Image (tube, rainbow, N blue to C red; front, side, top):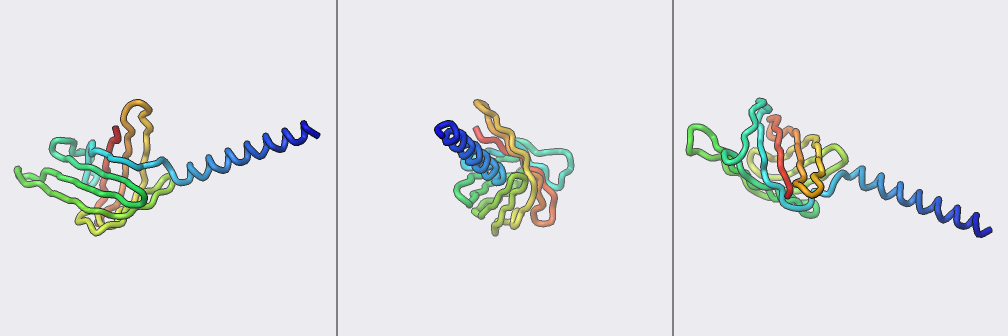
Length: 141
């Protein structure tokens, strides 16, 4: 009887572990925190713009995201400055941002998350924003 009970308890623990694991995986990684812009490729030209020509942050908290972007726009010294707050939803493969922020608006796309361990995490998002395909790479120290 004791062996049977131990077997049932062990099975319950395994099922619970598998259930919580799959639930977390369906939501994707925790994006909470400040992400610094590493590059942006507006129009997916294959020529990403890195700092210092493009700077900014994405700050994820709860279901909101605060966005600040400053992108040099030739001829210098013009800079396109974009900032504001929106909401976001996330699955294991998709990220949707809904905002009234100019140039971003309602952005939908897929992402690739690389857990940097002791180094910085990297998030690469390929999205459609304001009718334009854009790739954004951000890092979280």
